Length: 334
Image (cartoon, rainbow, N blue to C red; front, side, top):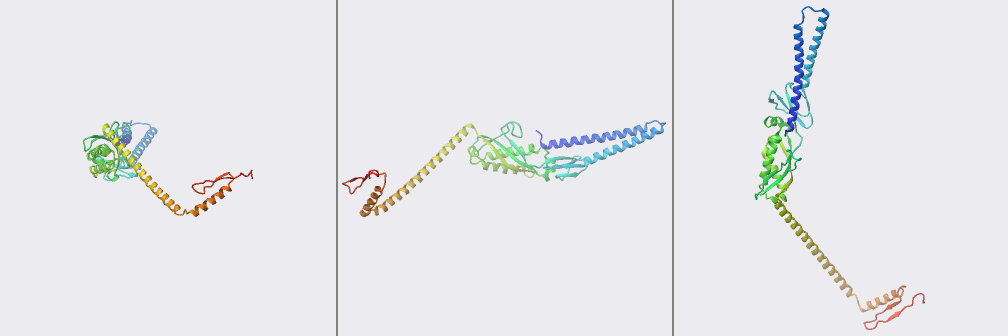
């Protein structure tokens, strides 16, 4: 797979080739006009001679105009947003990168445009997702010798000021030469410090931090900045995944039972508090229930029953031995 910088380079070479053809065509036309002039007949018609002379002058002016336009076109370069330009003249790479905007350069030089935007490099086990088509997930060994597969995405960008150095020392396809090998090495160096179950569960964030640290150390000051590492997926051996899932399910069940026990404990404490309150309330009520109060309370209740239109029979317990029954006639019989 070709890097994005390759296409910019190809475009610049094609434009330079077209302009070169234009200049060559103009030079050939000028040379043809000069040869035709020197080889013309010595005796010609005067009017025809002046016409040919004017035509040759016009042809020469046109050739000069074409050359001037070609030189102007080659001298002006526009750098679009998100890119920088690297000037290359006769194999020599300029020290200064061209920023966004219009620039005047040597018409014999070419400009390679390189992106400084945030790029992503993905290594995935899914065929159509990664930078390289196909299964590109990374196999790494854990501390206990088990093999795990990781899907990973790295965000990075090219430092604009360092673009000439990167182009001269690495080339436009620095993703394949620098970013990819650094990521693969960092993943394997980081994973070997942890167990497979740890990477799959609580140590995931720590693994990502270790990968970022190692990648930055490997790339160093090469003009490429790694912004963030995204660990997309961790694939463990099937037996280990089943064991981890069983363990997690058991832990969740234990947490559930612990929650239920705490809930029941709180409910028991609530009932004890409620019973204690009822007990104290009954003690307070019992302390105030004297014989005189009970007698007065019975009389008051009887008055309320007598005045009620729904009651026809009233039970009046005077003591524990007798229960008088009084039949009260309804309002119709009164």
